[in-house]
Image 1 (cartoon, rainbow, N blue to C red):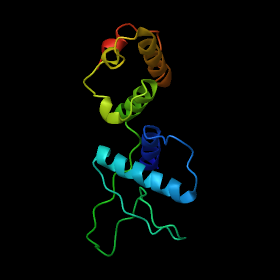
Image 2: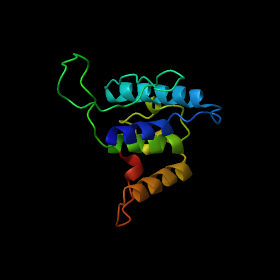
Image 3: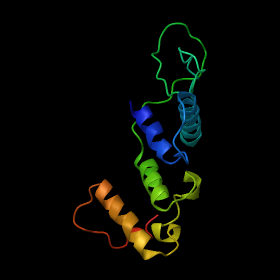
Length: 145
């Protein structure tokens, strides 16, 4: 689903420093990623029961409507990752920033790269490639916010 894709994209911005050593560590990591994405996107997720030991973990679960009227929060909308989120993750990774909060939507690539033209050109090239921009119009892209 689109929500799962968005959470997985968000996980790229939170890569662990080393390989996770167990299933429990992986579950804890994805719970942390899901919680972080929920805060970023303004949605909340239910904790699943896990069904096999190791405790539950936060998962973007889409629940079917109808019946019960349980009164819980509505399920988050199922939407594909936004272009802004994808761009921020790509820029964060290229510039080796620690978090998405360091990538302000109002700053230019030029400002974010600290004026380092080689990195700036690499980021612009990756964005043009990722979003299939044709015509080679990369002039001025680093100055856009």
